[in-house]
Image (cartoon, rainbow, N blue to C red; front, side):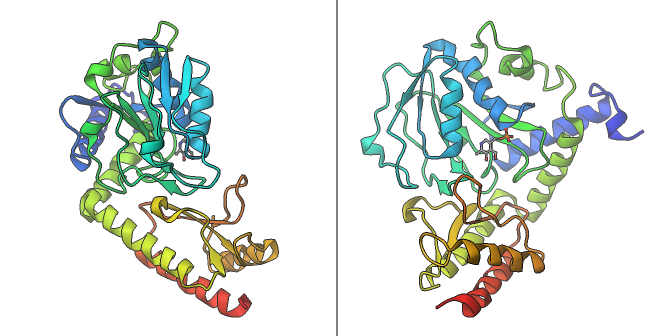
Length: 331
Ligand code: PLP
């Protein structure tokens, strides 16, 4: 019998479920007063689940909007209560300095997206919230760096970029935040209920959890999150250096202080990008079997996503290709 046919209440699945939780705890050094949940509904589902579990406490929440995903999260949150924008959405792709932030007195939580996948903006510090629970969307950078979990109320991440296949969402939640779900919160989104039932209240995405467990084992074998962080630094530095040394043939539009180590957007042929050159770039890259380099449709250009499974060697090959392309097409 394969895992796909098995009951999620079988001892075989229980072993996989427990091992995956244990690996998350070990790899991220999760303190004992935090629960680890495997949920469904994707990152978007979690935007709502967070509100239904926490917002009822005061009826309002603070949002740090630094790009596409935090903006979508804030819009979703407005269905559940009052949303305070801590700062106006920046016009450039950047993070306003904390001294300009206006945190409110009565927020049930402060939400932010640690790495904006579309925009290429990443926090390199933990936002200070004066004791209000901090909620982080780490869908695109979970396990690419060490985090001090104790500074967070909730960390969540869709598995699909760095730790496994789509379907499962990892939620790490501080125990004292459980039990506040509003009465209209569907049971499948009630963190307390999912926690009490060890993430098998209803059929979980067993195959996704199974593969995630394997990926977590792989991360551990490679040397853990420290090794992923070192790789991430090496990969992103290699690519940013290539962009910086290209004599403005490649241009990254993100402010240097908050450039993502994971999603690196850039234009080809100058700051505004040359559409024809960018199409050619993508075409030539595909001939070398380098796929998925097209920027998100909302921002255009090129985007290299350097998730955990992308190796340092892969990035060196990309950079080699970029240099050759520049020699051929640059001024
Ligand atoms: N948050 C971030 C940072 C993301 O990158 C994404 C998807 O790319 C989402 C949320 C939405 O996740 P999902 O597609 O699983 O709903």
